[in-house]
Image 1: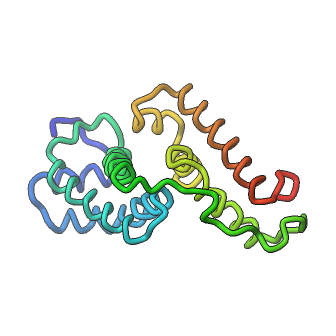
Image 2: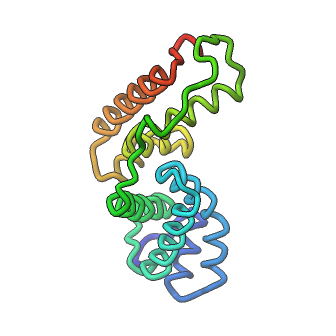
Length: 186
């Protein structure tokens, strides 16, 4: 880990982890595990599976801490590990959402939706769209990552990220329409 010093607290912790410091690992885990778990949960749509993959992520972080090159933020590197393991799991599980697995809304003609209904509808629509669309929307809206950071994580150009976000939003709107809710209803 030959890099210039970083102001990022996770960077300092990862350096200590690379030296075998278990307390630093615990601190890094405590500071990042919630974000990693919820990213995995939203991507995999299964709490137990997300927990399993999360544990694998931290095993990889422990083993690979000394290999971190410092070309991104530590959390971006960790999300990259989580992403790779999640998609590997999805390929194994072939756990792609099917719209037939979800019930309809009780009253899809009801245009006056309150906030909990909106959240429920968006959450249900997120389960319908592809994992790749969920992923990019998750990075943008839940983790508020800048496009440049997402591009680095996904190893694509910023313009590709913009395109993926555009198509993911369109897929989300389409899924919501399939659930009987139009853009105007929200």
